[in-house]
Length: 175
Image 1 (cartoon, helix red, strand yellow):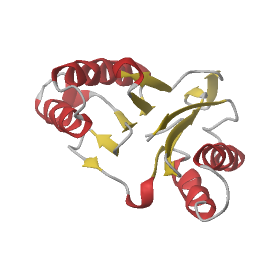
Image 2: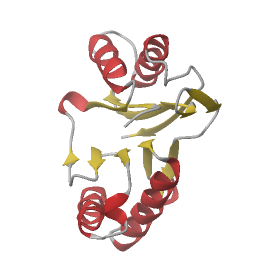
Image 3: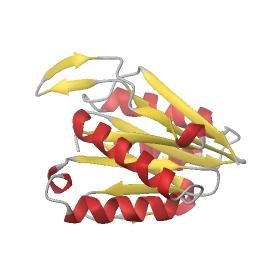
Image 4: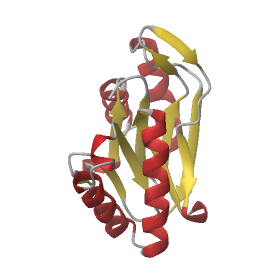
């Protein structure tokens, strides 16, 4: 997935998801302050997306519905969403990835049917995801808290990836 960077870090009793605000159409920056990280399930879940914006909004709506159907069960809601994502003719065409987290678990979701819990509580998606992931892993043993790691790692990704900017939105949950 291109044109964004989303990073999740779980450390010290907090889970933080942050993302940049750049929206690109080919080689052109269309918008610099998009909000790709948001709260779901009345604030109990945070999530971020990479990929086509309309597709991501559709997936967020579907995830909200699954969270209402399975309250307090993020993993089950995500498994049900990805089942639909793979089998429904309409959803199958959606091009996006998501990182979602609640107080207990953080997950990476894809249209390939992936529902993955990241190792060491760190995951990233998007075109700048590998840069942010590497930076976060390097900073994870430091004295920095989860939010500081997310902010610094996204800044590093923005310095390297042309599809990532420094306009960052961060959401956090206490465990």
